Image (cartoon, rainbow, N blue to C red; front, top):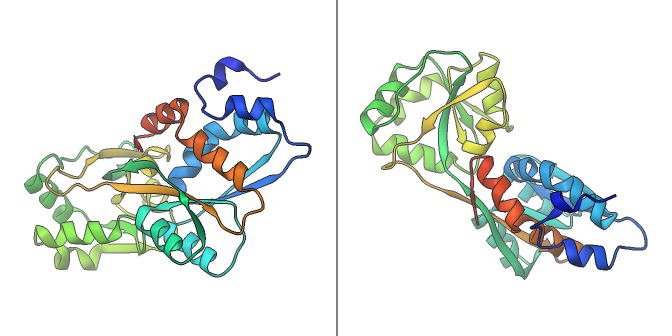
Amino acid sequence: MIRIRQLAGLGVVLALLQALPAEAREIKVFASRVTRIALEVLGPDYEKASGNKLTVIDDVAIVMKRRIEAGEPFDLVVLVDTQTDDLIRKGWLVADTRTDIMRSGTGVSIKRGAPKLDISTVEAFRRTLLDAKSITYLAEGASTAHVVRAFEKIGIADALKSKTTLVPTDTVAERVAAGQAELGIGIIANILSVPGVELVGLFPAELQFNIVFTAGVSKNSPNKQDARDIINLLTSPRAREIIAAKGMQPG
């Protein structure tokens, strides 16, 4: 029996309960890690209400974009806003389904239990990175270009190169947890999702930036209305609560 209290506030619930599908459909979502984090909480209630199976396939956002451009089938995508916009321009997505879902800042992580560090000001941030023995962040992540620009802005880009490892998969926080790097840099929600690390803090305000994650429905999807329902789910009041609890900002 569907627990109505848990479903309260979800924008798609009434529509789903009024017209359950005759047979279950698999709804395939291409996304980066932050969307999977949200749908791990929201997905089970959607599946109970709709009878559909929700399959979330996640990787670094640019990797998922390349899979789309290679012709891999999907129903809904949630990627960085500029990537989603490019897919709309190229004809992969239904333009009027474009919806900003969440945004996240970037921060620094350390292994849980490691000595606390100070990155509260630009100078403290600069000194902490220069003093670190090793640093890691994504080679092609949503935040990578912004991180590099921040380092260049405060004059430490060259000094950090020899002790920085760029990783191709979304395992930055996991590497820090395993002791393979002293500092990890990444999206706040990704850091908070890994038990073995701690968030040192956000980039200082002067260097901070937000990454926006934006949804769109595949033009080739046979399940366009179902995909639209997932967008409604991700923008519902309940989803906004979950997104905020995971360290992001809704919309």
